[in-house]
Length: 381
Image (cartoon, rainbow, N blue to C red; front, top):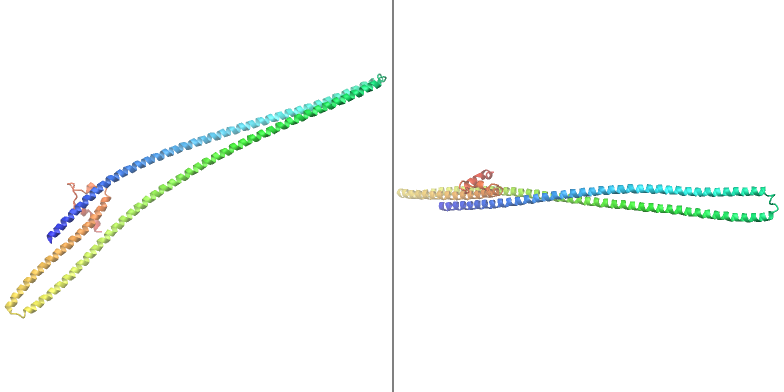
């Protein structure tokens, strides 16, 4: 039984050594892999940061270009508007000057017509005066003169009518030229106003497009921020879930230890009760044998008593040794179970240990007892 316990103990130690060596090797590989992953993630984050900075710089430069372009367009539009206003004022001034010139021409023509009429009246009055003065002189030629006067009057009437018609035609043409000029000016103003309104509409459309581009960019930035916030939240939730799983595992191991201790206590109580029953049975057996011995002869009883006592002592010694071995086996099993539980905690702690080489002893190996002694305070919890 002792040899079997020694073999069991050595096998458990070898298994623990193998488990620790495996976990140390696995931890080293995981640390190297995690280091490479961290370096790759760091490089990835650096590249992403650089790309983001370049993108931000590009966007800022593009925005500055767009703003400069918009400022230049506004300046050009302002200059064009000023030039259009100046041209409008100049044309309006020219139109006013032309209208004033037309008005002066019409006034001059009217005054000339009045002057002609006045001269005609004066000539007629002079003629009448001459005729009146010469009435006596030309009385003899009255018929001829009257005839001549009638013809002259007719001719003058025709000429006056022709002059009036000619002046009316000139006035009509002048009015037509004025009306045409006014209509042309109105059409020119309408075209300029239409062109100005078209430019204003185009500028409003361009501004609307720029506003839409900026709005889309703002939406994209907000969506990117929401996505990053979700990633941070998911990582935090995953970390919380991992922590909860670790706490649950620790709690499960603690409950398992409590259960094992409860089973050990129940087993010990059962063994104690069994031992008590065996003792009562042995006492009754002894009393029965003593009673039977009393019925035999004294010598025979003495020999039988010695034989019975010797067998009893031998049996009791064997039973005690057997019970000790059983107790040692139970303690060894319990110790092995506690060691496995402690090693599980050690293996879990190895997964979070940064320096795995610190677990090794002076010779580069791993001391199981030293490793387990580090976990005893946690095991006793």
